[in-house]
Length: 262
Ligand code: ADP
Ligand code: MG
Image (cartoon, rainbow, N blue to C red):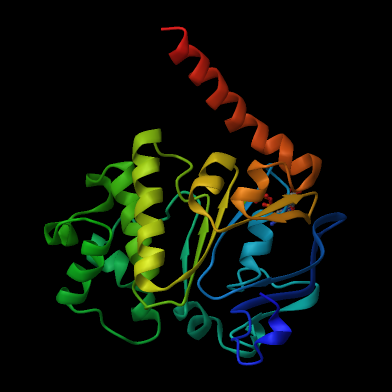
């Protein structure tokens, strides 16, 4: 739809304006502009080192840009104290990062605690239910959980502050394929149910195509493609995007052939 024709349409939830970030002489993210609409589930895909994590961390101020700015709900993210900002943004990071000496309940409640709030037992149970875990898990220690359960706790923790935005950096990277698939679907369902805006960093194009509404492909610190899964599947997005799409397409073809050969 033409935006100019709908003057009352809400602005984007998140906006990158000419943001860039260097580490010594490495340009991790080149000057980048991008707007993310409220309610969308965006996958950020690209090879290792293409700048995905650097771009994501500029949103919740784990790393500020050298140039440009990031706007969240219309305001520069640097205008708010980091703890207050992060309260409105859930973050699930690579490798989960649960505190090993804290119970599941204490891990989930860490965000609210940082802003001086206490999460009740009922609230912990509610958050556990969102990630399909029984209330009894509240008193377990992280080492008593499977990898998939730990990552569910990571998601519950990210949702504890009722965020509008959920940021996930390769959240399912270390999981077996079945657990990974189940958790991906759960996150998509939570995104829809809670009305979130979600950005998932992944190097797995299959995951991106199956879960996201919009796929951003990064290469060398630039967003080189910005497409829906549907248009990627019919050949849009350019060479780098299509090289990534070719992997699941080839696998699907090989499996279909195998099935047909009986
Ligand atoms: P991705 O998440 O896509 O794998 P990153 O955003 O982590 O990529 O990294 C982009 C580039 O920036 C890489 O060349 C990486 O080595 C470099 N980089 C990222 N973080 C740092 C850092 N803290 N110090 C130095 N270089 C970094
Ligand atoms: Mg990364």
